[in-house]
Image (cartoon, rainbow, N blue to C red):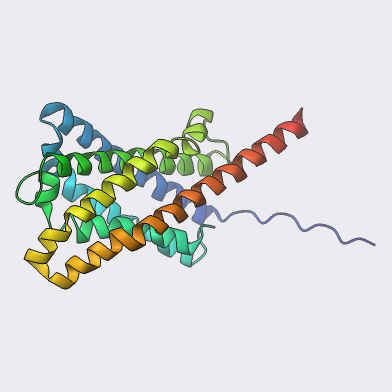
Length: 231
């Protein structure tokens, strides 16, 4: 006699509620970042982005460290390695680059028009990506896995443009930080930054981008299979 299939385990309402709250709050925080970036650029240009948004963005991004804990303790089914890489790469920027050398983001001193523009485009790409991602998760969890179609489409297509913009802006800022790191911190830190942007960043960017591509293929394949079954 065949064994009866075990019923699917229902998600904990406490965990589900926590994740809805976490994702909704994160979406609001990043929407605030995006609004400030857009407002600063409209009023006075990218030079105003860091004074109005830099500190707020730093702590908003720092909150994302919770996602490493979520993955580590099984709160979500996200791979720990790629989650750590994503969070660490941004920590390196907000704490180890623009946090130490705000001139780069402001556009004076060691910075210029190109560096403050890179900071502006980086924050714009980050914020747009995170508003889409966190909104998608919050609405998906609160609606039984049925987020709006437009948000679903953006979740698995917008990164084609946003990721290259974000990653190239990050790499440029790290490269520009090599010189001030040598003069203001230590030659060793300058070498670390150079090694990071020249040797570690390219393969890391490739791993993360191909991971997102793999996620997209998996989701699109599932949608096609489901469509065939319901046809």
